[in-house]
Image 1 (tube, rainbow, N blue to C red):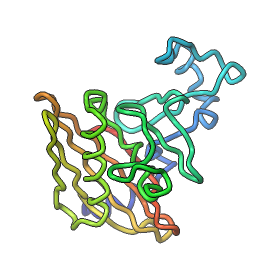
Image 2 (image 1 turned 135 degrees about the horizontal axis):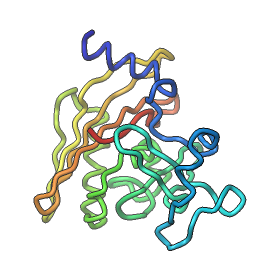
Image 3 (image 1 turned 90 degrees about the vertical axis):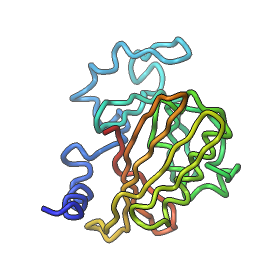
Image 4 (image 1 turned 45 degrees about the horizontal axis):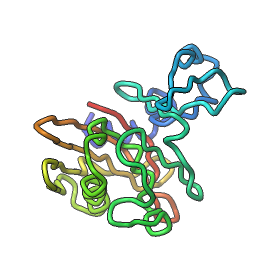
Amino acid sequence: MTKISQFLVTLACVGLVGGVAIVNTDKVYASERHNYQGYKYRDGGKYRGRGARSAPYVIHRGPTVVIPHQRTRRYHNTTIYRPHGRWYSGYGRYYADNDAFLWLAFTAITLKVLDNLNENQQRAHESAQVIATTAPVGESIRWNQGSASGSVTTTRDGTSTSGRYCREFQHVVTVGGKKEQAYGVACRQPDGSWEIVSTGAP
């Protein structure tokens, strides 16, 4: 099977065989409820069930990432996940959600090393992602600011079974000699915005 065929199979199977990257825990309570019983929030609170406070979100693919509800928010029909890094409106060089709405979903492609970036560095990384949505496949969009650098590369593209145009992206960020990578598959919606359908670490 060719790489592009494997990619299209991944798109066809999203939500069926481990392709689900972002899951509201309401959907996984029956089988995975035990995973959250001892989960502690960053603010020191503890998740004690659906009636106590909102459940966290989960990213599946590679290592599981649990996202506290206070690190998520909604803008129109897009859920914005920022488990790591600075918390702010907009994305990249677009400082307002209204201007950045086409790319807001890309916050779900996450790297723990983002916690070590300042806002300008994080926005430079996001700007590379914006450019990568239209760059040729295989072209790395590089950024460098202070002690941090990185790149975003479209590794392949294709069309999903529902007819949506999709791309797989590779993120690389290096801070102080520490390098991390993440991958994500995004599909374009009818309004031009992107939806993340799979994400995780290599």
